[in-house]
Length: 318
Ligand SMILES: [Zn+2]
Image 1 (cartoon, protein in one colour):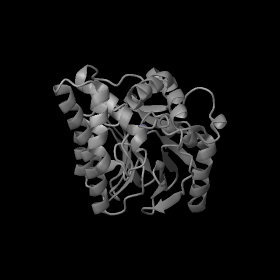
Image 2: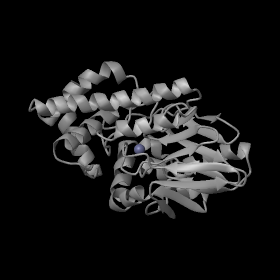
Image 3: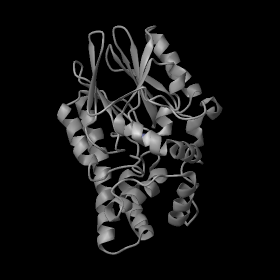
Image 4: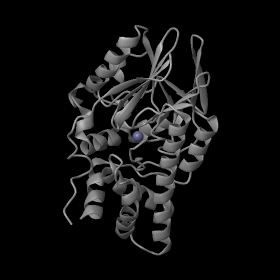
């Protein structure tokens, strides 16, 4: 078997950006499976959800926003702590950077390790990485459970609906327009990354998203979903991927197999169904390793470092 390039180091092809209008107040900046940014335009201010990976890349988001509004960008919301979502924040010069308290804890505990790890895994996603200021992106407002903001008359709810992609996952919900920004809790035509995930909780959290009954949804990766049918398809796809990984790993552990054997079995079983989703080969070793940890002896995700990434990859892909 030929050796796979580590993570996404061989992924060099630039993607085409779309800036999709979902309503008078909601836009989605998407790029064929690369990390998305959401934009909410209220009466008096703009809110950005997830920033892109570098200030240089965030400038392209700002340019698109300026084509549709000249209102000030006052709020940046971090749906979770991953570097690829947060390190562009400084470009927006927001009044506030908002995150859940659980996300703040993850930034404190593992932000530095994650920054080095993510830049090593996926260099293309960190274009002009030299524009990232030293240190980390720190929230200026942290909340637990739920926070409501009114951008003039537009109500924006920030909700923690449960753990899933990370323990700090936050979604943004526009109740008046039934539009949801999910972060990486929901993906579309893209493989869910589950290296920091809670497999047991994630499906229930998706049920709570489904219970809101969104008409439209901006996923963490993949195209903006503009009909209830598309929203249901993305929720179902994400749910079945997580459930399938979980079931394969539980089966392997019950049969007394080791991690590498379980990885090979899970990859073979899932590849025909999900192998066409972007970053499938990148995610699978991390996802199976985390799931194995959760099923065996680690209720909480262990910290990924650049070094641990390489050791794991070497062990599973050799
Ligand atoms: Zn993420």
